[in-house]
Length: 103
Image (cartoon, rainbow, N blue to C red; front, side):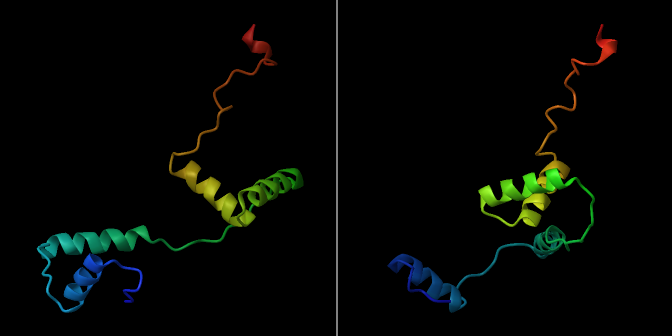
């Protein structure tokens, strides 16, 4: 590891770490738990194919361009946010004013 960007104190800590002067107080069970958690966090990506209107695709591509990211990553981000509960359909529960059953 290079220490060019570290201040003097950080360089001393790095030097001590690299010399093996630090001992972990973490139990083996805790270490195994954290290793398993880290392994399950990194998931393989799966490729899918979807059909959508050209208009929707153009809109997504334009918005991805505005965000400065590739549109496929933009779409994957939207799907991930929805799947993880961080994106909500704002019109899903709104009453439709054109619905004749509203009376």
